[in-house]
Every structure is written in C-alpha cells, then in structure tokens.
Amino acid sequence: MDDGGHLLALLRLDGCAPIGAYIATEKARTSALGRRESKQYEDMINGGRTAFLSAPLAGTLEGGVPVVVDGKVVGAVGVSGVKPDQDSQVARTAANSLNG
Image (cartoon, rainbow, N blue to C red):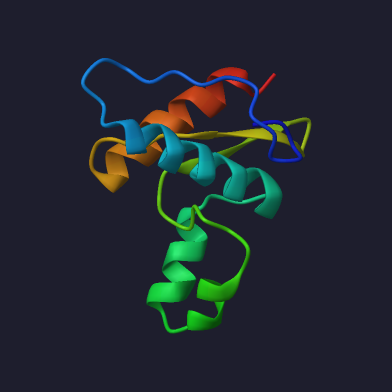
C-alpha cells in the first residue's frame, strides 16, 4: 500500500487461499491509514474498546505493518495465510527491507 491505502503490489503464493489476498490487503490498508501496526487495533478491540468494530477498517488483525522512511509512514505491508505472529513477522521483515 501507499500511504493513502492504495494497492501498489500484490503477490499470492501457490497454495494460499484466495481470501488471504483480500485479508492481507486490508491489513496493509489499515496499517497505512492508521500509521501503526494493525495488531494495535486488534489489541484495542480485544481489550474492550469494541467501538473500533464500527471503524471503517476491515483489517484490524495482526499482520499489517507500516513502512517508515525518515520517520514518516510512506506505506504498509500486509501478510495473511499463516499464524498471526508469523504474518506480522513476515510483514515486518518486508517493511524493514523497504525502510530506506
């Protein structure tokens, strides 16, 4: 995603369920627009801030990570298809490789 949540690239690996591409895209969009990891929204909801369920964000699950260059969020990476902590680990690795 770019910083406005617009898709720049998508790769769905062989064997990944088609819905994984949708979920990963929404995780990245949530992270780009919110300027934080999507897991933070999941944590808020699980912690009782259920009002976030009505926010216009579809990817409030772990696995979206912002790309930060010179202290500014310039986009985000989203991953879906394995366990949540693995999704975020892969997304962090990708985001860090893009962090100028």
